Image 1: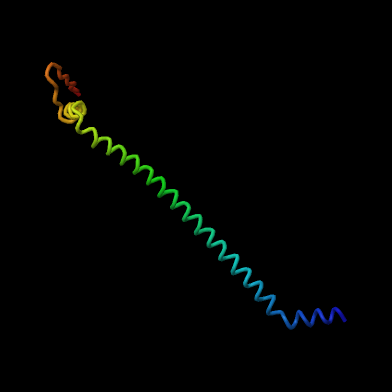
Image 2: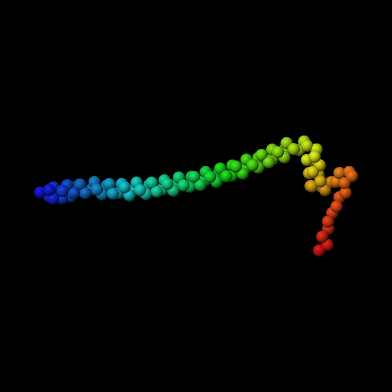
Length: 99
């Protein structure tokens, strides 16, 4: 008798089991997709954070260069490096490669 009742319930409510299985499979696929998106967002965030830190360092360096432009020693150094200007009393030495 119990076996007959169980078979009757299973036969009448097979669609519930099918619905639950399909729902579980869909939910599992959706969770995997969301986890993949979260991983991609984290990687993008880390890349942006690294770029931000790099640009902040560049910004600080440029601020120091701007601030040092009023320093006469810095101006003299730039003139010596970029233009090859030599202050009075110093000797300019040039090395020429003959090859």
